[in-house]
Length: 316
Image (cartoon, rainbow, N blue to C red; front, side):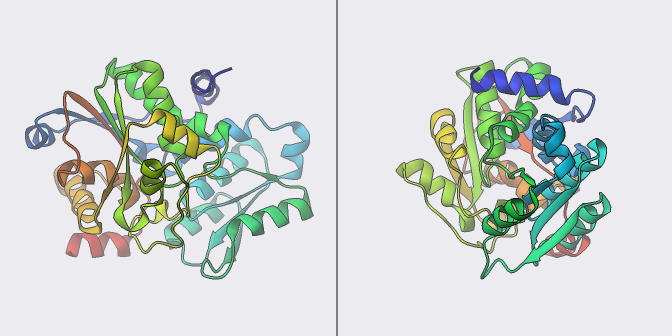
């Protein structure tokens, strides 16, 4: 089965469990860009981000024995919440390895869904190693945040919904951290319309995927100090890197100031609360990093930001 078929299967699997999120438009955005802009609002997805899609698609396929033994993952927040909620829905014990500087709102939500959180210091510890060691010790199944075909296929359903509702797009812009959402959406977009131009967007301070894409060699950025906390993954993965190289047409980066302006635009002009990681595509559009054409889809990947961060952004 090819990867596009995996995305189609994931769409059927999550139906009735994940929300079909709304697509919003803005005449102001259309005027400013000279194109038709369609915002895919994953901030209205369960747990407030696209991550529920992949987590449900992966965890619902576990065997009875795997579900009984429980799962473990590592995440700064949105994937953590998704795994925790899916665990609650399916009766699976969940353990999350989370950095000690993760946004408080994301940790609180993760624990609220019933997960056990294990803190670590990202400056001197590897979350991957901690998760692997604990999975071996306790028999947990690892549900990684992005580098897994079932996760990738689940995330790609966001783009599938866009195409199902809009029929066609000339361009699709997708935020990129570890590449799960980007590679899944790129596979979906190309499966629906081979001519759709897919562009991944990263912060300038976390440009590992952009450098990897253009060089053909995997680059790493450790603990980048970007406000877009969802993109602080060190690099693309063994699965996502080749998929991004094959299905994505280009990668662009945006400045911290552009990210902040995009969050503010969404809040004041469209009345949407979108976290910095989720606003990367719009940041590229508003800052002129992308020259849009025709019908343009932008994935707003999530809306989980705490009041303190939002106040800093709105006051800037």
